[in-house]
Image (tube, rainbow, N blue to C red; front, top):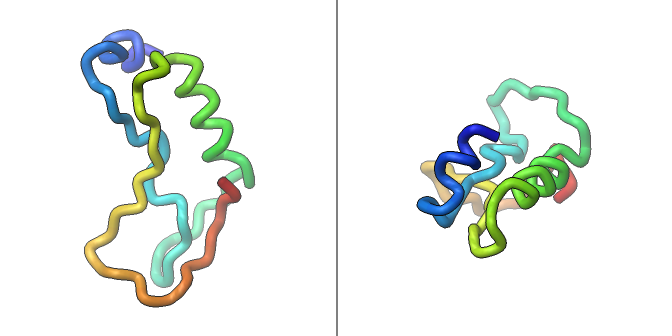
Length: 73
């Protein structure tokens, strides 16, 4: 909440959730199935409507085959 209060009017794009998809070789951390959805609901409550909220799934490689999801968003 402190981050939202401080930057809500100056930063217009926020990564709400980072690296939620499973990938081979990564440690699997159990999370509730709706964690991304709930995180976005909370962020939407704290930031103005003109702020874009996103999921960051960046990687240094191009995926050429489907990946397994650990979250349903």
